[in-house]
Length: 369
Ligand SMILES: NC(=O)C1=CN([C@@H]2O[C@H](COP(=O)(O)OP(=O)(O)OC[C@H]3O[C@@H](n4cnc5c(N)ncnc54)[C@H](O)[C@@H]3O)[C@@H](O)[C@H]2O)C=CC1
Ligand SMILES: O=C(O)C(=O)Cc1ccc(O)cc1
Image (tube, rainbow, N blue to C red):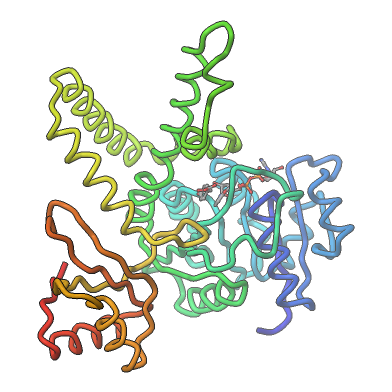
């Protein structure tokens, strides 16, 4: 990629991490930063300039961003939208505008109204943390994380290609989605979980006794499920205000589920409770331990185990002697496989296909799921 000028509006955790990664991969690119204190540059920008991540900081969008080939909008989702209008009269004809916001529908609507579709491609790195600010930014933050891009039919193919290449170069995994699908998916796996984490913390805060025993005894499970409640309040307020339909849909679904659990507890319905926890465990266990928390495709084979000594070793040997590496192996007991079945996780689709063929060849019973 030829040397270009890249602008950042908002240089906190995500903007800072992208800027650091780009600077590391493309040291000759010119990086310019702007943040929301118009009169005096803020701490995030000064730190990034001092470290050499940014070449320049500016308080003047009109002059400095008119030279940019690529501009990242990295503030809270509602503020990103406001910058579209401010930037429109000043950007170069071939400038690419992108954002990192957790909601995509709202910014795409604004882009349409402003006739900026030929400049804009939405983005959302599916990685981050409960921390904020440039102090916590890292060139490693996006490594191996999915990075959603939301081109539309108006996006130039070369813009999509350029962004895919850039995302790969900074170590993330580009995935193209339409913006409505993005907003539905993230409502279920990110936005509603955040609301639940916040509600759980608030429930404990309100229900604790005067000696604060709940706060004192809050243990691993509570801390795991509520870590994200420490995230930036303004960011989550903006997300809730912009992805309303999808969030409301999934909040209603989970409220219905909690109601069913409550009814089962009132009715002492042992089976219902057992099946609910079993189904949750099975699905959760099937989500592999990706370090960034992203859901990746799982390649797996289920095999009936013969009741004889060394049965697992025989299967492992068949696969190993055919150069198939096993990622994970274990016996699974659940309602579907009451007697137990051997679950073998592989690294890719071709290993999965080859394993099925081989084990069938050796007369093993394979279950397709
Ligand atoms: N925190 C996370 O884990 C993730 C956040 N996102 C999205 O990334 C965006 C930024 O989030 P973070 O970097 O985490 O937040 P942050 O709080 O670390 O950084 C936000 C930056 O934007 C600046 N800012 C705020 N309002 C502004 C305005 N009106 N004009 C210019 N600058 C402004 C702040 O000064 C700060 O430097 C949000 O849209 C969020 O939805 C996306 C993926 C993950
Ligand atoms: O901290 C975590 O585990 C997160 O899930 C961070 C996060 C927050 C918002 C996003 O849009 C994407 C990722």
